[in-house]
Amino acid sequence: MPVNKTNATETTKTKKKKAAPRRIKAGAKAADKRKAAVASQPAAKPSLKAVVADALADMKALAVTVLDVRGLTDVTDFMIIASGTSDRHVRSVAQRVVEKTKEAGFRPHGVEGQQDSDWVLIDLNELIVHVMLPRVREFYGLEKLWDITATKRAARA
Image (tube, rainbow, N blue to C red; front, side, top):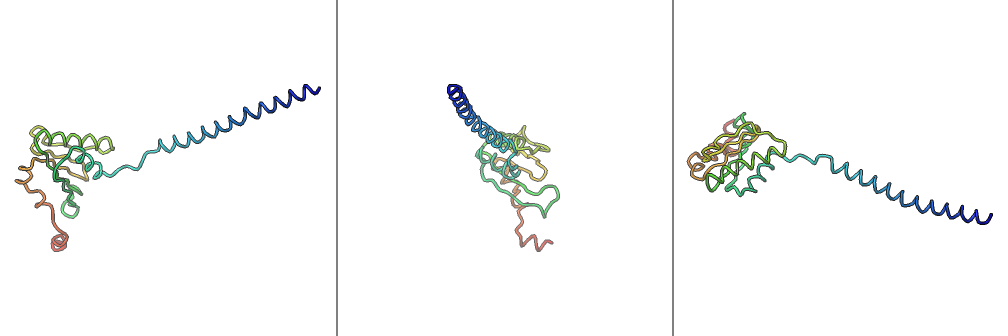
């Protein structure tokens, strides 16, 4: 009988040894599931302005200006004006803005001027992006047209 007790004790010890790693694995699996659940949750959606600014910076757009036109028009809230070095650069910058905004979940309502590429306009509803050649930007002077200081806005109201 002592042999049976030893065998029974050894069997119990063996079971305990096997059970401990299983608990660790189960705990690790639970932690992995929690990490996967956190990773699968969508991150905070970046703002449209931030997405556009990043796309313009990626493509090395020149003289980027953001204008707040909320009190001046109902068409849009902001205008971003940027320049490109050539017609190909203007076209590439505009395409990157469209690509990045679509990836971020914002759908452009329209894109105008991609054929000529002197001036490409991207309508993103709350934001309008103008990408232009420097000579076209200087000629039309959109900053002067839309950039009204706070004192002028107060006097206008």
